[in-house]
Length: 170
Image (tube, rainbow, N blue to C red; front, top):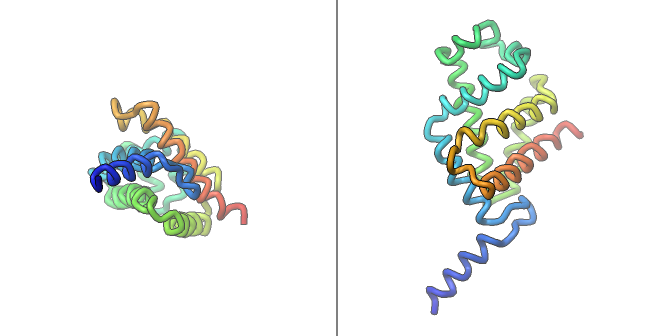
């Protein structure tokens, strides 16, 4: 009987909507499970994001004094660029790891947005990053990118970027 109750609780939690995140337990698990493949190689994953961002918005590279004058094709060899790319994946990993504690996740994301705002990045920069991520996810996750995973990631990215946007409304 205890086993049955445990299984029942497990499935009910999977389908229960977390009002603070707008995600079900199952959606959170889908995001965390698919993200695990990205975090295995933070540098390469981050480079894919930043390279795609710089290709779509070449002017953004000029905002990084440490690697603004380096040709795009040479960036992957630059250790400062690699470090920044790893930091990007780490920041997303923190948010995803903190899904169980939405207040902590919000505080972490707000601090991140404040630092970027202080450096001159705008809300538009974050919106463009969200679009780059949305475009990259199907290729990154491949066969894992089912409609269910897509919906979970849409909710996750909306949550992250709506939280970041709060700093720009103040």
